[in-house]
Length: 208
Length: 208
DNA sequence: GAAAAAACTCAACAGCCGTTGAGGTCGCAT
DNA sequence: ATGCGACCTCAACGGCTGTTGAGTTTTTTC
Image (cartoon, rainbow over all chains, first blue to last red; front, side):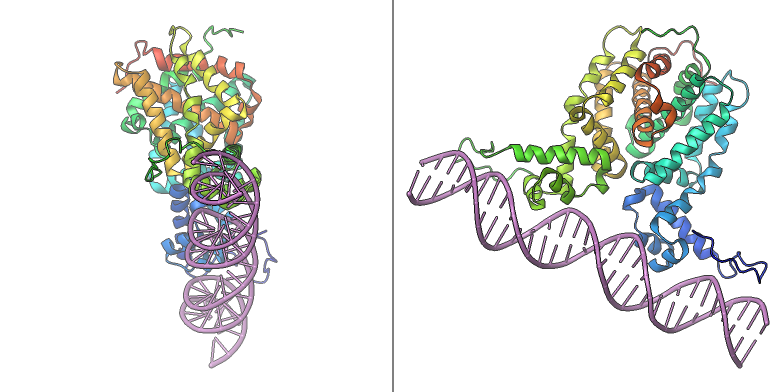
């Protein structure tokens, strides 16, 4: 795709020489648009206007709208790494820690939370985004839960899904009761529930 | 909007006389399309083709694409009524009952689950859908939790959001771990967590 | 049967979309 | 200075969109 006949003659080609800031500006504008408007409603023309560039410039940089979206979504992989640390440590207040890590990740500054938001919004419309989110959740899950029972993997997946549901309700749908509550109240309410889900099938027995 | 100068002269005007089946066919086609493709990707031309009708016919029936979407979303209000019953009864296995009611509602036949799916997919792109979902959740919440503490309302909202998150991960994003699990396993895992969230702040104390 | 209304068809408009190609301009290496 | 490649601009294409208006057929009402 991106790999053309690499010029072997000049050793340090590959880095852009000229003003690389323009490209970054386009990427930032696209990130913001995808996060707030979603994939379908975001137009290349609008992104170009936001970045103060000609639309064809965007095409020349990223090839197509899908590639631009892929470039935006390549970022959150780094931002999501912080979730790993939340699962480590003692399991005493595990639920509370995980909830707080999720909420704070989405309350972070735009450069960190916007790719996540773009990924989340895009996952509903764009198959590539859904696949990316799917793979991410699954990989992080099977990575962190290696050697555990299949039930543990299911429970971790459920925890991630439920937390994403809270983010959706709070940031996209805008359910008043959740928007009004601050992080501490949410952690206090959800933490124990997540704790039960994650660490303790404490004598619970299936009814069927 | 929809109310024009109502013809008072003819008493029983207002009911359609002719073949009302065509209109219902268009509505059914739109419901299916909005549910599977979302709002933005669904075109009036495609809906018309599915229903075997001319595109302009759709316009004449529903006025605009937004109105068509609104007509589709007017249905789930009835389908969602079943959630009320889940909250009633003894609080012993409340969490389990609520989880099962949600999962079964989305596993129901197309005529019941498609409007819900359309509403969910649309909420991410279409502001009207987001408002409808927001109002619905909030109204059902404040209705069922009348007279309870503000904390109870928050907890119920969180429960609904988390369950919606599970639906999104399972039906839209398609996280393998959740897709593979059947309803009973999900109920067994999520039920206790919901139980803790809904009924019992059992001596839980905020860590400040 | 006549008349009116609803259901339906056909063709077209204006607008926005992603994308393309042909150029112009600037900075750097030779 | 001179070439060359990256950066950037301009104008336009073809396609698909929601929407409209006029005309035709079918059904109901009188």
